[in-house]
Every structure is written in structure tokens, then in C-alpha cells.
Amino acid sequence: MQIACIVEGDGEVQAVPLLVSRIIRESHPHLSVRVFTATNFRGRDKFQHRVVVQRAVDGAARRVGTGGAVLMLLDADDDCPVELATRLLEWAREARSDVYTAVVVANREYEAWFLAAAESLQGHRGVGPDLQPPSDPESVRGAKEWLTRNMPRRQPYAPTRHQASFSAQIDLRLARQNSRSFRKLDTEVRRLVDALQASQT
Image (cartoon, rainbow, N blue to C red; front, side, top):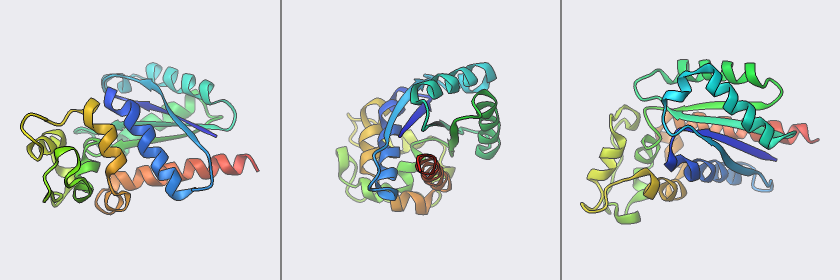
């Protein structure tokens, strides 16, 4: 079983498969699922174009083949996560209705999930030992900057240096508890794996 990811930035190339694999190990510990990045859009603009999105979905679907799935993940920024996810899922299903597909939109950005589980980052990669999450992690504009303010001066947060490491470290329970969009990721990953498992029985 395979899940191909479509992401928007260099940091997510490693971070997203790592995080998704953690969820799978927790929810389906006896299954072996390969998770990899099929497409990196290197920016959010390409998600606005139907043809580009559908080409990426088709390419990812070809790579996973029969018994595979496609997961698209991007940041909401200032858009409504539900509306954005609905539109992208419609485009994806138009391109490949024969492949299990999910779209998850982080509200407002991927790093908001780190804020949601901030306590589990205490002392990791120079993060302060007393780090506490903000009251509403998904309302913070500039989660990357928030992380930087809580890291050593000469080691500001950078996705390509920290995103995968933080994804490996965060407490999934805390992330689910404090972030609605992370709960969406958790739900969609479990749904995809359940569907893939059912298709092989």
C-alpha cells in the first residue's frame, strides 16, 4: 500500500510523509504503508490552477498504481480551509475518480500544528524548556515567527531545517486536542488507510 503526497514547500517534502507515517503507525500498527512525496509545488500559487492540480493528481496516482492513494496538503493562509479543501478535492476527483484521494488544509499553516503541541517541543532543537502553546494555535498569524521567538537567536525556525524534526517530535495527542485541522489530517489519513486495506480483502 502506498500514499503519494502533494505538498507546497521544500520543508514538507520530508515532513509530511514522516508525520503521515506516524499517524499510520499509531492507528494501524500492523500495516506496512509507504508514504512519499510525489509533487512539491514550491509555493501555494499552483494550487489555484485546476489543470496544474489535476496533472499533479494524475501523476501521483500513476506512481502509486492500484491499491494506492493520494493526499494533498497545503496551508490555508487567509482562505477558508473548508472551502479550499472542497474545491481541490472536486478537481482531484475529476482527474482521477478511480483513486482514493484526500485533501487537508492546515489552518493557517503547517506550523500551527507545532504550536498546538508546543509542550512536546520543550528542549528540542534549542526550543525553550518552558514552551507553552498559545490559547488558540490556529488563530496565530505567523506561526513560523512565533517559533523563532522561542528558539535561540542564531537558530531561527526554518522549514527545511526544522519541519521534519518537529514533525517527528510533536505529541500527536496534543496536536489533535488543540488543532481542528490536525484532527482533519488524522481522520483523513485513517480513512485512506482503511479504504486501502478494504480494497485488498
